[in-house]
Length: 141
Image 1 (cartoon, rainbow, N blue to C red):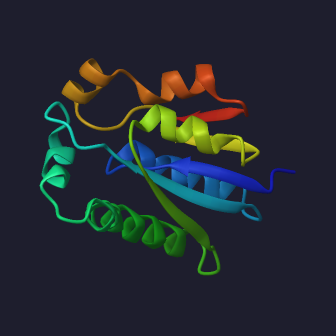
Image 2 (cartoon, helix red, strand yellow):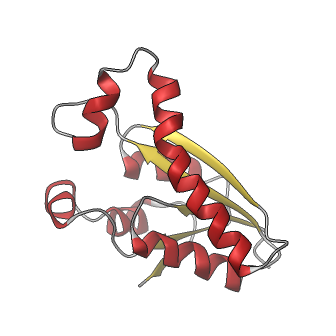
């Protein structure tokens, strides 16, 4: 029986499906939603604004809050008693997910997220997580 599940989430519909799947398949598990806020760089769209923020941590937390709000809404819709933990990291999504994955028994991730340009430039995060994860990965389509 799986008791700890990591669900990486961004603002994509596929990541929402991943959370819905995790809540359905692992109803008794401790589910943690992880969102990764890109490090400030001129090559990362949304992260560029963070570079201008006085307090990077505060700006990252604020950026993650809308995703956490949506995750809580999904958990509430799935089961009124469903509880999820939420965490965020700064950095590259694949590295952040892999660094956290070892603390869980499985990772449930959407098959793709972001825009087409993100997928072409950055590559498919789910694919890279599958290849590098120290724990089993469930990819939800």
